[in-house]
Length: 65
Image (cartoon, one colour):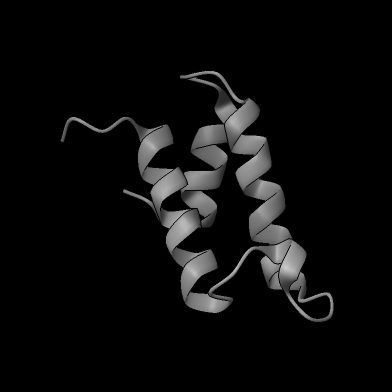
């Protein structure tokens, strides 16, 4: 597998957003806590450096191998 853990977690989060909402959280009606949580985790992931512990925590949270 050539993708980094960070790339795999990002892919999983984007897939979940698409499956759950089908559109960006900012356009969602209401405050779906699941979509807000995924969006927040995606923002945290984007700020993390490769090898950062938060990437492993998010991988465990979202069951990313």
